[in-house]
Image (cartoon, rainbow, N blue to C red; front, top):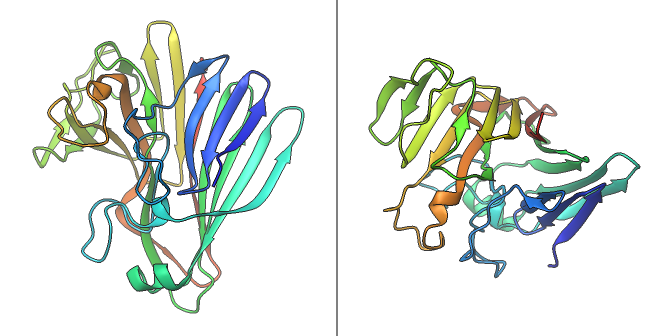
Length: 266
């Protein structure tokens, strides 16, 4: 179960077939995805960091593991290609006896990675091959490298969000220098499609599509999460492309794509 490596110009992407999970994205030698030093890479447990997939449910569920089973399944290579200006990889997952025991629905999921010189596109496409409607929730749970003491996320000023920690509806501060609430933070921002993660002169543009919310998350220093290494929470922020406020419902043969595009210094 060796990782798959994609290259384009000065960019490199490392993808684990276990969970169809991006583990590392480097642009000109600078790491853009945070991966815990204590991440479990044994091929049996969720991997802390990179871009985990949440499917077929987001968050906790009575019928199975938190954030679904997609991130702990071995995906198959469906397509791989290389051109002068991009590298492309598609991994696929379909219903089997193990997924049937947790979620008795036929499905086909494809996770596509498109690497360019200064950009990475992640796209989760789910198709309903069955004869009945298929409903699910999903997210691309991106862990982005940053110094949380210095970061700014643009396009948030004055927007409404739901604070999951206090179960309260809130507004981000207004004004050009509006900052996140202090960590820990777990904010669901309905409809947020575009924002920029800024730290000094370094800017990462984030474009979400096929979603109903962006989720901004950091567990803070008292998290008690065993696979987040000591002090690791100071070095990342999760900005997720999610369809979690309401389920996606697919008619037979219908498909839906949830995506996130990350662009450096755009």
